[in-house]
Length: 416
Length: 129
Ligand code: SF4
Ligand code: SF4
Ligand code: SF4
Image (cartoon, rainbow over all chains, first blue to last red; front, top):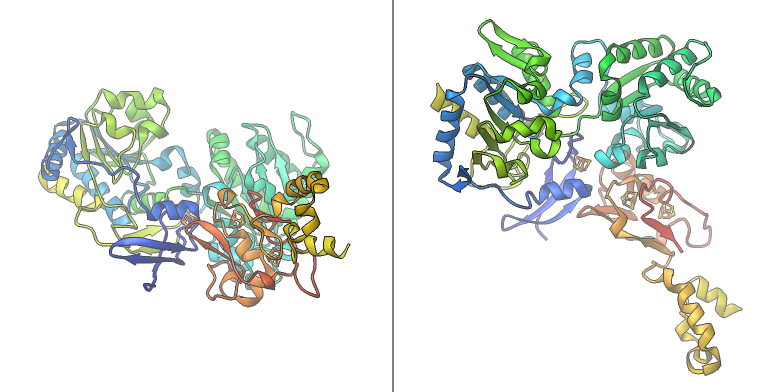
């Protein structure tokens, strides 16, 4: 048997760093410790992307030149995607946006961007996953189902492992709580501590819980056993080290009144000791927010204007796709599959460049496609885990193709 | 009776009972037993069955099993992949695999009704028959 390589999995933003991969003749023979999702990541794309212009196969250099021409001609180009790229590629993308005077946004725009912003700006306390493993005694999965989205979350960090202060295992030392609209896989594990709320009812439940924490009688517009909210408030108050894992369900539900999250965390921390960790999905979604913040002071939705970088809803992918952008470069994302058709429809009408290792739905309508190596498999670099920790990503195997960073830099050379 | 006990503890197979297999008057009983014992096919000596098709490789059972924790406290016990061969559960190619099943707390003289791998499984992929 060949010697295994220790690998950091880029299957999700948990970035598990203990995976053992056995490789022979540049082919994966066996993967140990990765979940099914991570194993699928190791084996790469089902269908690899081709280098094309107008859906005809061309040499990759021609595709890059064509992409540069489209971006240079555009008055208002949008560079979008980035959550499946290394930080190095993201930084190159930000430089390209600056050079072009373009808008840049990532998938976090309609996802965890808002929670990450609160943490980066110091409005909400956060901690590392190692802190969770060593110290956490109460974990709350709110609008999150890590058992489906980040399969090793509970086993590696948040519930099952023995930690420095949690030596007796999950049954005695940790309490898992799930607040969600459906009885998810995670809810199943949280057993008696599953709180079923109405769709869109997160803000109302949060306010009721704040009442419970402050010793007032919680009020809800629908039939919910108030005693259970008071019990929940009591468990949260008793926590020595509590963590709220904020999922997409929560973020989508309360995005109109986002100050509520910091208000809730402040109220909770008047009585207890709680931290918040966003459940970022793609392996380097959080990296984009950090890298853009470092360059511009904003985490997403940035337009590089004559007066410098500006962030506003106007520069978000959603607004830019509805009207605004007159050319789009997508890196490592499949907007036709992931965005509502009402928003992504315009992609068919404006010049579209796709940089991706795999062929996907968006490939079929792209004017230019440029294949790149899969980050974490054929391309190395760094990434930021969902809790904000910087991680090294080493490639598993050597390939001849270009990385997304190299492609972005080649385009930059041609436009500047 | 002794044969029935041996059958349930899987030290004997129903096919080892000559009258049941050979005599026509037991055909009905044989067919009923086949149905009853069907779920035990593929079971380990301890009665452990893993429904691989349901397993997502989450590793909850790997970290929760007390034998894994006792035999690999700084690997499985701390949430990492197992660091030695003495464990019962490990995840390979995205699916859980079982070994050293005789170490299972449900087995042997001081057996207990452990459920530490069954309850944490989100997909009901682990069963004991
Ligand atoms: S939980 Fe995420 S990072 Fe860990 S092995 Fe699974 S897909 Fe990879
Ligand atoms: S029953 Fe208990 S000891 Fe046996 S395999 Fe499951 S968790 Fe381990
Ligand atoms: S707990 Fe269930 S799904 Fe998770 S690895 Fe074990 S058998 Fe598979």
